[in-house]
Length: 537
Image (cartoon, rainbow, N blue to C red; front, top):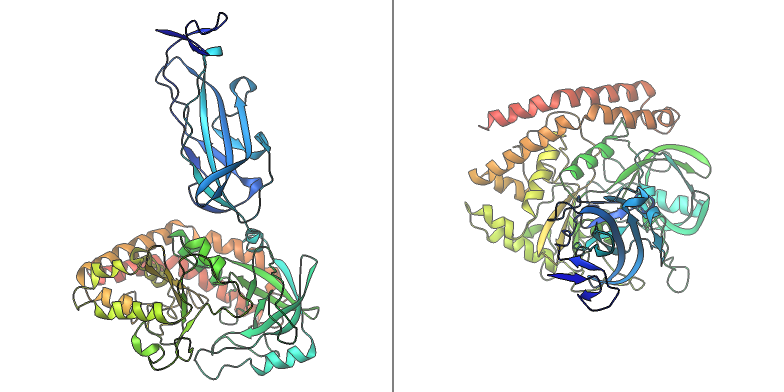
């Protein structure tokens, strides 16, 4: 049977007669991967699977690619498209935005989908494939620039005398306990843009906090609600972020442990902050190299979880996930007196997250702690997988063992972590933080105290799962060429560290700490193998 291109044979006196052939197979969008976030428009490259047609004589004639906006997960409006023809000499399986044209400009931190199709080359009888499946992605919000690992940027804080005195008075915490500090007004300047009226306070626990005569860490809040000003502050972000966290590196003489540790955890899919190095100037005086760490806020949750409307809690200093660390039932469920404290606490000026969200109380955590306690002895695994993203937790435990993060949730201090509940999965995740005291010593991977790790270690089936994760993390550590990565960061920051007069160690100690880091990287894999062997793995 034959048909004209416009319909059955005879539909028009000048219709071209075409044999019935198979249409090409719909391509697959190979990159970006579905769900990618922080896509940079200038760097977006769309890779497609090769052209395939059952009619082996049919050549690849053209590729069409389109990008659509999304509403409630459904494509709505086409904003960009490209049509590439084979006779143009273009690469038909790799498309960049410069190959097409925009109907509407892309926006920051916005969801889109990509779809593509192929056409064979049979002249007037050419046929298009079906469209590929839609591949979702989200554009960058500007924070990729803020956490660029290969650049040291400058941050300026102008701190007036009243603020200086107020934040200095709250610098030292009353022991190794959770400690809330008040924000006070200051001015932030970044890339020549002045942000007046930001809120700042000194941050840090009993080991890292410093007063204004030393090298304190800072938290900066751009949309701070100044109690002396009427009304609510206007929403404000710096490269997508409402907050800056500037860590002083006083407990890390290399000034790069945090950066390397977070990168390693991210390699295995553990939700952790991004980090970069900055030079901090206070009242136009150089205060040295700081680590700029991504805050654990709603935007962070959007990057790592399906639903950012869940509740998160911070655990500090010997703080296990047990009922005794929660407010007493007789107290209000918003009482933050314990070692587990609410990460999200909306005030009158905050817009609550939309959707089916957790209450900003201790109720979700209370339920979770009760579920953990109710799992009978000897039945922890796999029962725990109903409540926790447990594979991810095993990788976290494994990586933190490899890098000897003794100040973590798993080990004796049970510190430096958040737990987050994703309402879409009804599961919890542990988010590690404060990974500066790492790459030193020999943390025993089995020397755990936190309930999630200790109960797993004590059951053979679960212990075997951890051992497998530890072995994989150790192999990743070995294959990552960490010595080269350490060298890259060192070469980037060393000139600025040497000029840092507020650091608590001299330049010889800085050089020695870097040498110790390289030695640790070289020796740690064998030591982890010894730990595995000692436990029968």
